[in-house]
Length: 178
Image (cartoon, rainbow, N blue to C red):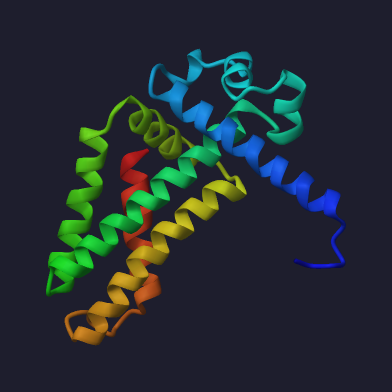
């Protein structure tokens, strides 16, 4: 324990994190039941066991909460698909095909929660927000890791850097999804 941090600060921080997590869980529960547009701050607050004022003290808006949920779930899903592709396939082409197949399957097989979040994420990528840039950067980073591993295998041409190729892939996929 850091002696420079007063006890009330750590308790306050734990409380802040607990409230945020309850609101995230409330959002996921509601997104599993209905479309984003039908969810209200009042419902999120009630399910998260906080007042409306407390909601806004912890989250700037319903939209911000949904973006945080989207980031958490979609990034985790992409990482799982990347790990599966790396573990199950021997060539870069096979890895890319499996990764994209799994990502596509996630889109088509998803429950309402995931469909709501995926739709939101795709629309968000068309905005110029820092969050949308972070989501795009995560996609680029996954492709770059995959292509760097492929270069090490010798099945990715060295004419272009893995970063450039990854940016092209992520950009093409995001453009076609929007």
